[in-house]
Length: 292
Image (cartoon, rainbow, N blue to C red; front, top):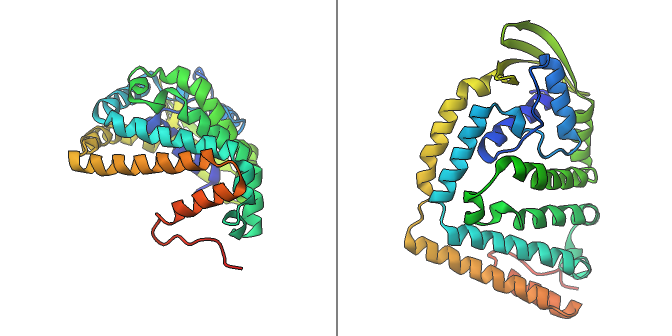
């Protein structure tokens, strides 16, 4: 099993290559110092902790992908989906009392219910932040300043999710390991280095890294980068949605908006539960609350 730190770092940086996460620009430090500092920023909830970990050329590739994505994605579908997310976040915030007092919610196992209560506000804040951000509309995506976006919105989202993870035993344990992970330089030759990652409870793992324009990156990521970008660009053609399929999706979006509006309009617990019941009736296989 790969070391937790290696898995997290590689996945986070690769995710940056698709969506654009980031970290403060750093000069060519020793590879172990560089990675240890990057890990520290991530574990503190610095949502910008990966963007500047990408070389300028890589950032340009990501920005090109976002631009092409915005050109190919249907604006009605994208904007409509984020509108639903925004309404969901508002219902979760404004009707929190009704949600946890509902007979439907009480049917959940007590441990899950308590965990949900602890994480609720952080998750709602993250949803609200994304739903009102620049990426919530195609117009916003087309004008997106990635660095500014992740310095502002990214920090709020990542910080909120990390805060929520503190209340989830498994996630909290992972975060604890992330914070205490140790990075050691095994060897270095030119622009290549081998780093050893150690986390509590896991076998130490050695991984090869390569220096690219002052940024230390997983060697496999560097080797695969151009191919991954080309594949990502090729996949954008699949975003073209046939007219008949768009009609069906927009109908679903319309139904979701209507149902969320009914939850938002509820003035008491009885009205809220009635709205929830109507929603469950539209979901295949969904049952109502346990019968007394």
